[in-house]
Every structure is written in C-alpha cells, then in structure tokens.
Length: 120
Image (cartoon, rainbow, N blue to C red; front, side, top):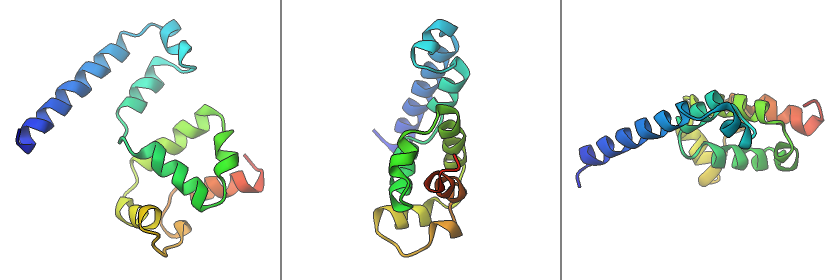
C-alpha cells in the first residue's frame, strides 16, 4: 500500500477511535481515572509523546518525581509537548545524545526542574 493509502487508513482509524471515545459514558472514562474529554485529547496526541516526556524527565533528573505527578499536570505537559515546534532538536537530544541544553528548546523544561526542586 502506498503512503496515501496508509494516511487514509490512519485518518479513518482516528475518526473511529474519537467516535468511540465520544460515546463513552462518564462512568467508563472514570474507570481510566479520567474524563471522556481528556481521553479524546490524549488519543489525538502524537504516539511518541509519552516516551519523549519520560526520556526528557530522565535527561533532566526528574524521572522519579515525574512518575508521581498528578494526571492533570501530566496532561498539561503532554499537550505542550505534543504541540512543540522543536521536535527535531528534541529527538536529537533524546535519541542521539545531542548536546543541546533542554532549557534552550523544551517548553516543559521549567516544569521538570520544578519537580526536581520539589515545587510540584
């Protein structure tokens, strides 16, 4: 299948998932510890956002603190990460051990540093 066919399949699958989440009753979303709106927003994020956030937390020495952060803060940080315009430099730093300082490009760097400082 060509690239266009794969794109069409992904769009159809995304629409199907969003419809299912929209039909999810509040009790069903509560089973996930979330709301239907939060689940729908999470479903639209780039697939690598959780991994990038975990790697960035490790890079900045906040992995332990990040694991204990409340879900609302994680969702806020994930939305920022998902919309970040520095994906290329971020990937270089996280996956190729690039030398850039995350504070120079990561919009969540201050959040991670607050976690390390115990200000979360």
